[in-house]
Length: 239
Image 1 (tube, rainbow, N blue to C red):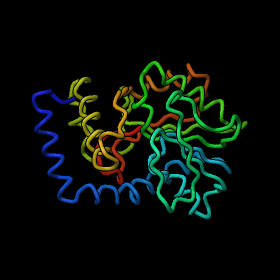
Image 2 (image 1 turned 60 degrees about the horizontal axis):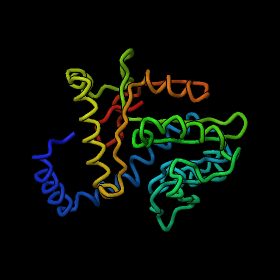
Image 3 (image 1 turned 180 degrees about the vertical axis):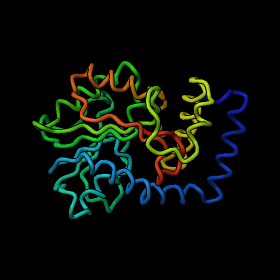
Image 4 (image 1 turned 60 degrees about the vertical axis):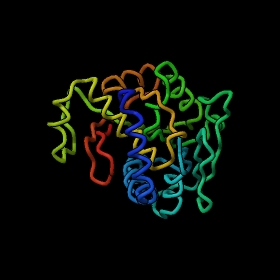
């Protein structure tokens, strides 16, 4: 996503911007605006009482659900490769074993709702089905898996346009994925530090995600091309 001769210039610019204090503003956005947008979206599909957020980062989603009295959530567990848990979070945190990073450290049948929010594209392609199988293992009967991803549809228009969709369509497929990788990486650089970012960037279009979900023996209840939602700072399209 970035030519090697430009990498040093890009890093110099990112360091300059970080020193300006933008990273603190971005983390504040992550803690408030994005977490609220994500919680509102997941709430549409949530069944309780137990929420498990895979690749939870700062565990903000679980914290949002536990703080909302009307959410129906009584227990929230966040899992991640990195131990990035805010001191005041009400959600439980469990760290993945580095020797088996794609095994979810949650008991079988415990979760009513499992959330994978913008994390599957950081999993190598050949491991993605295994992660979904792990989600199926930890699901309680009648439980749900909610997947939010950076991506776009080849067959349907976005629910939200914000004037960005026509320009995005003008990109080649390669450039679409490259631009999503760059935006995602820069956002995580400011939000959590570049070294904490797994970087396969295994993006898929919506139709390919649907095929993978069905291959993993999960039944699709609803599939949406959200487009460019209001409330998300970086402009990657969302599924």
